[in-house]
Amino acid sequence: MDQKSLTKFKKMLLEERQNVLNHSKKDRNDIIVDSDDLADETDLAASEVSQALAFSLRDRERLLLSKIDQALEKIEEGTFGICETCEEPIEIRRLEARPVSNLCLSCKELEEHKEKIFA
Image (tube, rainbow, N blue to C red):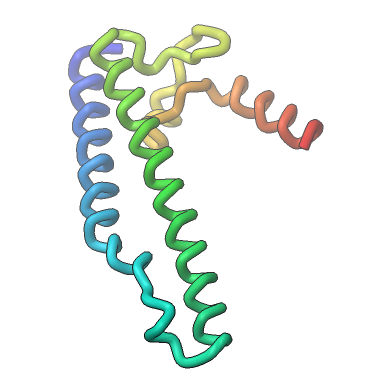
């Protein structure tokens, strides 16, 4: 992959990383709820569901940040855009749609097929 493309993907990844971090900071207070402030069991149950959703979203953000960091490391190492399974180049259109991709489309489809069978 040429330097211009690598620079473009690095910029995309850094922007996405900043967006996730900004979103995470903005919504940090939605997890903290004092149970004394809730009127009844229904309010408490609704609050618990809301907290569970918030924790799930934070976990997804954490995983995305990890993938972004791995992709940025690959750019520095010179291995960005190479499938981790078959070591063939990942299609540019796939990387443009999802720059954290570490598998080519064929290998990703195979992985998802295996997950579907064994899940």
